[in-house]
Structure formats: C-alpha cells, structure tokens
Length: 297
Image (cartoon, rainbow, N blue to C red; front, side):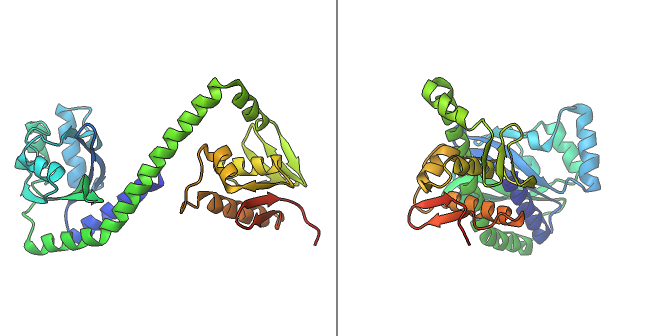
C-alpha cells in the first residue's frame, strides 16, 4: 500500500510539471509481456468523469485501471516496452489493437485524451513499464523537455520503488513457503505452537489472540512484525538472541549483508516500549544481536 501511494504521488507531480491533463503509470510483466495500467492521474477532472460515464454506457465494466494489452500490440507499444524508446503520438495510433475504437473515440471527444507522450521506465537498463502524459492538444517542445527533465529526476525514485516492490514480492513468496513448511512438518508445528500461548516477562505480556503487547496493562502499539519480535524475545528472555535467529523465526529467512530490517524493527519496538514506561529492557549485544533483560539501575 505504501509503495502504491508513492507511485501515485510521483505520477501526480509529473502531470503537474508537464501541464498535462492526464498521466498514467503502466507496468510491464516481463514473463508474459503483458502491459497493465496501474496508476492514473487526473481522475477527478470533469472531463475524465464525463468521458468515463459515456464509455460505461457501451462498456459497463470499463475502468482505466483494468486496461491491459500485449506489449507488442502495435509498432508504438513495441517501441516503448520492447525496445525502450520514447514516443510522441496521437492517441488513436498509440491505442491501435489496445482498446476498442469506440472507447477511444469517446475518450477523445469527451475526455480530451488526444495526444500522448510515452516514456519507458527502466531499472538496471531493463524496461519494466512506462509513464505516459496525455493532453487535448499536441505537446510542445517545451512540455517534452519538461517531461524529460522530470523523468531524469524521478528515475531514481522509480528504481527504488521497483526494487522495494520486488523485495516485498520475494518476502511474500518466502512467507508462503515458510507457512507451507510449518504446516507439513510436525516438529515445526510444535515449535510454532509455542508462540500461540500468552507469554509474560517483567510486566510485559503478549496476547496471541489479538497479536497485541501490554506493559503493566498499558497497550503497546506494535506492528505484526514487532509483535512477533517481542514474543520471540520474551520466549528467550535473559538469553542473547542473534539477528539471524530473529530473522529466521519472525521473517522466515535469514538476514543478508546490508539488509537492516531486523535492526530497524527492534529499534522501533524499543521506542514504543519506552513510550509506555518500559525503557532499557532490550539491550544490544555487539556483533551478535539483542537480549531482553531487566537490569538493575
């Protein structure tokens, strides 16, 4: 959700900079070579609302975010998604073999979607999608320059989001594999069951039914990850736990060099505990990990 919002913010800024009526973020599935509109800017304009209403009279299920098509649908889409070349063209030419011609006609006449600028988005020199700008009038050279300048500045942000998105997908796949493994292994099911019981330590209490944490009756606002880190550390209270064991127990896979998700989660948890009066209970073990331990002042 956070990544999706960030994409939308960048797209909105791009549309404003280009002085375009609409802007779209399009993603390419490199396995199937299918292109899909994932984000669109300008949906609150009267032209868009009227145009969409007219289109839905002939295509009731139409949504701009449901538009998908083969990367090689026509010579312009091939240029953008398969060759990594930017194009400037009329919408009729760009949408050939992409959308019903009746839809395009209504989009032109009512929505003002007539001219386009389409730029490939690359990560590590590989095309992963495109950003498009659309206007009722042909784009000027000044607008073209503005769009190019915006994309140069925004490219690092798109790359960062793309890498983050890829990491999120890897995490989801690893979590599914972990859950399947636990479900098929009696020993792992028994270990997993230990974390389904309430645990307490020095006023800290975990509630597995609500996945919540309290300190002496005061709720601690934790994320799901922070909850499981807290549970594991209570389970291993007064014993040092390595970053690797935390990563394996909570995330289901080891922490890799340069990846700090364990440290970031523990730091956030420490701050939240301190906010409810439970400070200095999690201690760093240099070069190893952490220990949950109540120490005398």
